[in-house]
Length: 264
Image (cartoon, rainbow, N blue to C red; front, side, top):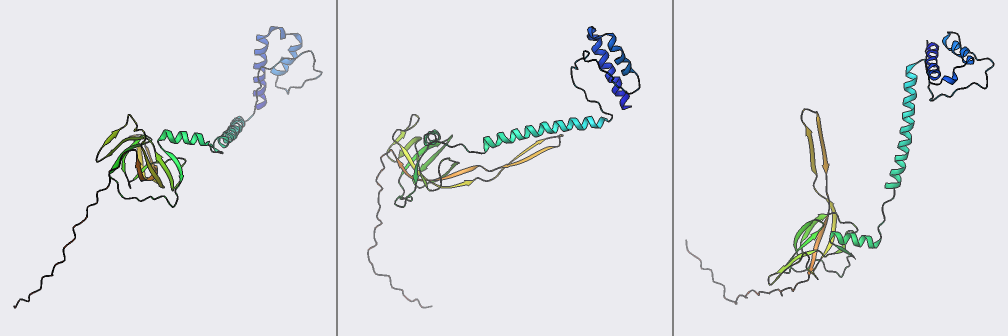
């Protein structure tokens, strides 16, 4: 059966070629056609080197259809392996080496967010200072904070800074005290807020649940935002009022009242 199907397919192919190309129809091709149509095995004797024709495409015949399926699947697997190898190479080339920023690029990107890294904290630097009646409104990224001396705030993860690094927050939108208030357009010139990086932490987990009714579709994902904790140590750019010291009046020395025994 397999040989018969092979011969029939070859016959159809040869007839199609000879019908479309009349110059190939010559007396020398008649034995070839008879051999194709006959059920006997195809044997060529004394082939004529002058006679030949060109197949437009290659065809593979098999007695088992599963062989074709296996061959096709093998080719697909080979293509998949090649694609996978190329994708792996691309991923290694892309994600294998992290991008290295130059100092100028780091400074420019940090300035766009709204801060500047000064350097690590030193021992002489005083972090905890007495309270001063001055406040400021600063912008870090797309968030605004009202801060004063000694406050701690949580912002989105700041790059290019580590724990115990000193920062200068230069996007100051407003500065105020008990005597005056300065509003920037949009930033107050010569105003800055000094801070120290205390830690890099993760926010509480937020659950994202998606559902499509009557579709058996439910997806649950969790997300924890990376945060940076900053401690405000100083606000500059405004006259700070002198702290008013109120002394408590001292009590005059007096005699203690004597206890009198009461008879029951």
